[in-house]
Structures are given as structure tokens and as C-alpha cells.
Length: 100
Image 1 (tube, rainbow, N blue to C red):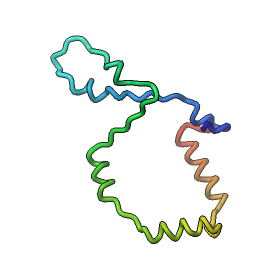
Image 2 (cartoon, rainbow, N blue to C red; image 1 turned 45 degrees about the vertical axis):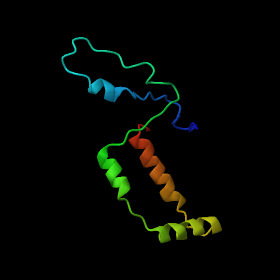
Image 3 (tube, rainbow, N blue to C red; image 1 turned 90 degrees about the vertical axis):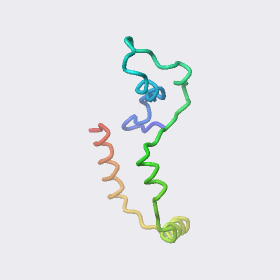
Image 4 (cartoon, one colour; image 1 turned 180 degrees about the vertical axis):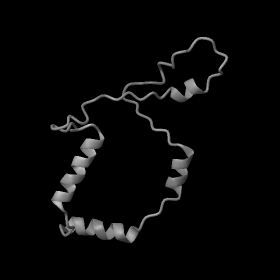
């Protein structure tokens, strides 16, 4: 989905899935070699997490009771929303990603 104001989502991003293969090649190779074309397939996104992130996700804890209460309040329409605070946070995000 593209945001009509900031055009967020319109820019194309290319993921270099062959980057790890390039880094792991021996240093004595005289000429740089291009990554395998079969590795970077259009539409095949892949995310590789570092060991630190995987450990953090494995040990992540959350308050399931609190999540259930918030979910129930949202479903019932009783969850308080501060539209001014939401707008301010969106503006902060826009400025971080290059908005004006």
C-alpha cells in the first residue's frame, strides 16, 4: 500500500540475498565475482536474523493477560485512543524516514 502523502511504499527495495555468499568467498580470489543470479529472484524476499536477535526472540516474554485485556477492550470499542498523540507519532516517524 502506498501512502498518498509521503509516497511511502512506492520506492522499490532490492534485497541482496547473495551477500553472505559474497562475504564468505576466499580473499585470494583476484577478480570479484557476481552473485548467483538464481539467488536473487524477484519477489522472493528473505530475512536472515543474527544470532543475537534469534536469542532475544527465543527469550522474549510478554504479559499475555495484559494483551488479552487490550484485545478485548479493542473488540468492545472501549480502548482509549489519543488522536493527537497518534498524529504526533506519525509525524515523528515521517521525519525519521526522510519526510519534511
